[in-house]
Length: 160
Image (cartoon, rainbow, N blue to C red; front, side, top):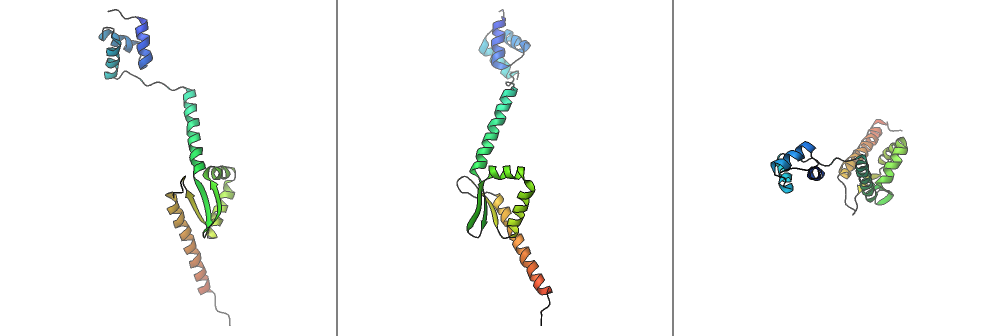
């Protein structure tokens, strides 16, 4: 059976195999395209399609869109007692942090020191796992402040 270039090209198009592998598989299978596909598959000669730079860029853009969507659905909340002081999408918080990181960190530290609670809230109001850690940090700061005040009161001599 003679193998022609059209058969080889068709097999290469379907499998991304080399000319040599496509020709060899067609010869082994007497020109039967389906059998040649199976032959290449069994011998692990089928290569995945190579992605182009455009494909990779498109994947990158899709990933960024997913992250932004998730960030917009997740809220960053600062509370004092039961009242909400600030509620922003995480995307905005990230942008502000990139633009002014020192101010953002300072504001967060001040919020914690003044007894505010920081939390993240998911799309349907569900709590995030990071909130447990943030609560522990806030509790530790409150306990430290109480201890410092108690130590200060003990260290201060009474006035007569």
